[in-house]
Length: 326
Image (cartoon, rainbow, N blue to C red):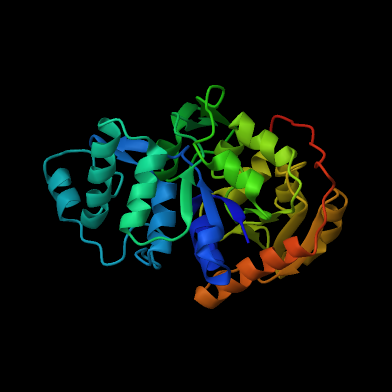
């Protein structure tokens, strides 16, 4: 089975890890968000791609939810002692990966090629692709002006309310090599339980990716990142309330209108099933909290099962876009 999964953030990485346990990893292609990418101390950092790499290589820190397990912080402490910028936490082991990536990029290697190289070196069987090799950056609009995503999310602790989201470079961005092929050859397309606006949104901002999803002939299943209308971590619930008009499952489904056939969401939100159906999306209710490896696998299996029970038209009908939708 060929599975293409759009992913970003901690929840996305955990879901992809469950997917690898649920089906043949050789058939999985994870298409990752690059809107969060940034340069730190001269190094190119791709947080969401790295989270998937570490999760699939069994190197991720489960407790923190990001970075590598068994991490040390000597380099960062030295940077801080020297009054350098230490607000974005990079551990010593993590720095090694960023050094290798940055060197390769500076030598002319594309982001997709260096990501594939890193995956091979870490023994990852699934394919991991950036949505685009082109520069695409997420900006957050607040009442006090625009902030880069990492400035808002990490440095400021996402305190400011979000008035809008902008994807710099999206107009010119092309899908990375292999992305459209993965979508075209997929038997199932999945949307991980990631923030629809700042994790999946940058992927959908690449026009050819959105068009491929609109023209799909295979089932597309999204998993909601909310439980009881709340995010497990991060600002997804606040952003949905502010930009999407609420935190019910229907608001999540509406973010992906015309792009999905099924929405999987938690049993705490079962009262929202009718709202999802009203949008022409089939609701599937289950436990979605990924507390351990078994729970991650069960959620992935539920999404795959939902896809197998779903038929789509010869070409899916595209949905109208509006300003609040990613």
